[in-house]
Image 1 (cartoon, one colour):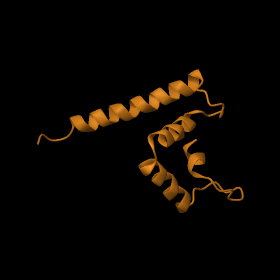
Image 2 (cartoon, rainbow, N blue to C red):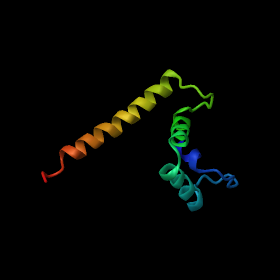
Image 3 (spheres, helix red, strand yellow):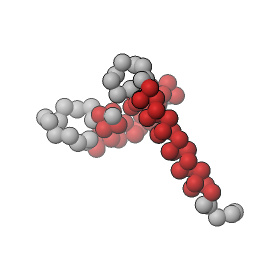
Length: 82
């Protein structure tokens, strides 16, 4: 889903994200409002586009969040003391 979130153009059947699409998407994530960021993130996990998360979509969401959280905790624990 993240590929299709950035690939906004019809590239004639080629599956790639143009640099402009990537830059616009990253700009939106960095500078957009909280509502825009939430809507974007929700759309990544709403695979069927029904604006509701199924049990499997919710499990995928939670697994992703926990993976990032644990990776951040692990990296923080490995930092040398100041």
